[in-house]
Length: 80
Image: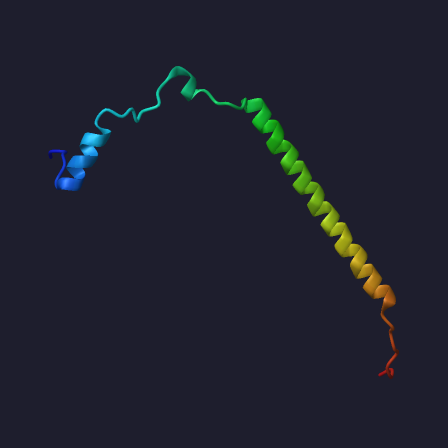
């Protein structure tokens, strides 16, 4: 299977980009800009924040249930 330009536009594109460098395999391009320990630390902080938010949300839900229950007026109906 041959690779090549099939029409006029493809030929122009091949000529235009024939000498362009498209691979980025320098030695410094393959190294991460962020250390793994810093990434894990940030992920841990994010997870702790989310866990705290869930705990606060749960506590707030329980407090709201308590407020609604205390403000409700219970009326005794006829005993059976």
